[in-house]
Length: 232
Length: 241
Image 1 (tube, rainbow over the protein chains, first blue to last red):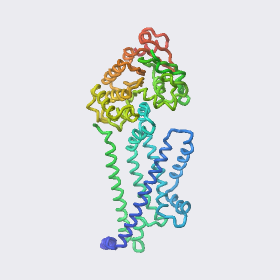
Image 2 (cartoon, one colour):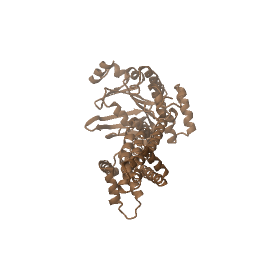
Image 3 (cartoon, each protein chain N blue to C red):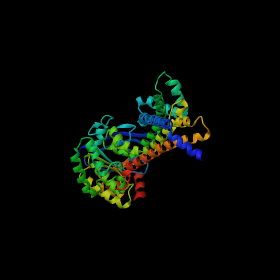
Image 4 (cartoon, each protein chain N blue to C red):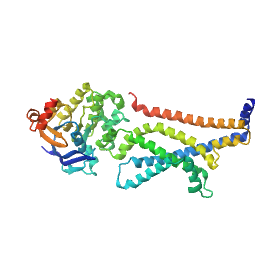
């Protein structure tokens, strides 16, 4: 037991260890943050294409979107990461941070598009019909009526997706990137089993705190958006 | 009287299901047409095809002798108001925002003008106190009366009512019918699909009976209810009256 406490003290009193953990944590946050932005942007575009009224010039884009989401959702994230690192962006000196962001962003886009598509489709058809009957343009109907109602349905699932991305970035250690997960392993390695415990649990706490904060913020946002459902 | 609306050979098919099988119809200024018929006869579809909320499979619709096309449909819809069975107030907007959204967005009124008109109409129906409420906090009858004045905000030439009282509790049906009656008395041209026979008798200048996607019989309420010409209408009236 005293050994355990000694390890805790060792971790928090060794600047290199703290530095490694913080560096790893920062990389995790960087990849997650930008991947979520890429995923949301691309996911929104895909969802809009998929929910748009079928027309001649949308047939091919709709088909491409379908293939894209099917392939991304049907293959492991780790494999997609490998393909990005060792095939698509296997260019000398190409920044690996960008490769990682794109790998997770492209993956998240497929899931985000499904979330947004579901949110848009869940808006009562009568709401669109009311807008049409008033002579409003499709864009006005979308931005003033459909989108605000869809967002309310989307937020909880989108919160889950953000959490998933943050945790999933831990696999970048598989391509040798030094994220929070990798830092924990690195600090612990080379010693006995007990030396793993402290850095790994510390990393776990970092993840947990981040995700707890996001859950809290999403909950707050949900509450605010639900105000039109409440009485008066 | 001047003809406002003319419909020629309107057909609508859902998959293999032929809902409208060639409807010819004409509407004059100030007429109050009540569309009757059994459930599934196509009367709601007919109404929804008039402003192309439902896309007709074939046929022509003329408003003031102008053919309705993809290009002019949004303009046409501004002149043809619609009141739905399920009210369809915009859930994320307050009552006032529901009323002024279209007239302001379409630049028919400035925002102060629209607000003034909205408050006047709300006051008239006794719901001014609800001006900042969201639809979720209103009763069905309140929602439908607001939906009616929302359509009135646009100064429409024709108002379409799609079973406006079918989703209401018995108590609020009276309020809504009274408001429709008042709108009708002001000279509005109206087409209404309803199951309220007594109201139909009272308000209609013409009854149109649709069954299996076709107009079977039309005429004044007097002739329609007292001396129906076709066996199908005779049978229908025997059941509902």
